[in-house]
Length: 432
Image 1 (tube, helix red, strand yellow):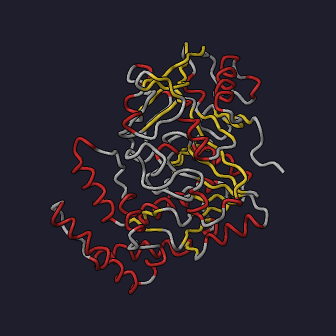
Image 2: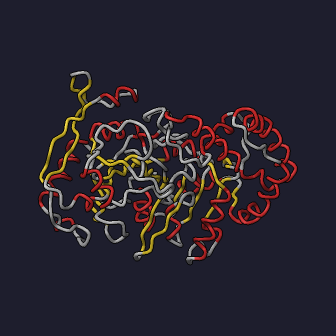
């Protein structure tokens, strides 16, 4: 099988966009399978930065086919802007390069209003949502009242479904949140020009397209959003996203069987970050944490919010390897640690006086644990100009070897900067 899943092994922001972009040079298809515009994948090509929220990260390779699958929730206004920006920058010259599933759920303005109103009402107990309407859109899907992409091209169907959906939404806006109700006719006028611009990209069955590609031996990358520890079922609930972020979601969100997947690559930073609320055992609330944030440009690509930073957490990573079935790892942002005299690594947790090596299932337990930190010598050499693994400083290779041995998974790719060229290969991605 030629399907490879790219999944975040931490709390998101691991650098999946860069890795997918680099891998896409050898791939025939890149499939985005879950999440929405709350994701921000940053790519740097020839010094030029591109931030993608919905379009798969393979789009900067003209010969790579990109698919937005059924499991994604789509902000149609944001997607149109993203497409137009790509086209103005010389990409997506051929509309056939991008296919969007007809059955993908649509995010509309009322989803964002509801998302923001709920977060505001939480006051001191905020979850840390991006306010992009992701949760309310997934709720509508589960409640069987979602608007899907195909609906926006059928006026009568769209009006009927909007009227049904807004019965509840307007009642909430008026009685609970004291907001204005949404007018169906005005909403349809807003949707119409966006539908016209998205029409060239719609596909009636992206599942069949992906199935055929894999059957014919094409190389297919499945691109996830967010990270393992934000998974709705297996993350630090309730401080999670609204979709399943683990590797199994690639099959569910795309509509293919698990036997189509041959490899799962976990993307991990050389340290750990988290955006928003929730437990973070290795967080550094000091000058070191601020240094990582500054050196690593740790600000959300979607919201601009500063990321919380801390030491690498091997307990959490071992958990991510287990729940995803990760076969290989890519280690990102090694260059950010340059200049530190010593580098901390969390190898275990202490909970109520007991040393544990498994990731707790309860967020409340994670709030109480103390990380067991081992320290390794750092390095002073600039890694960003390196083009060969053998040129890495000895202390850097010792750090990498320690991580690989502790996790029991091979590290095949090492990133030493944001650019495509700042990538060191231990082993090729695709092998015959």
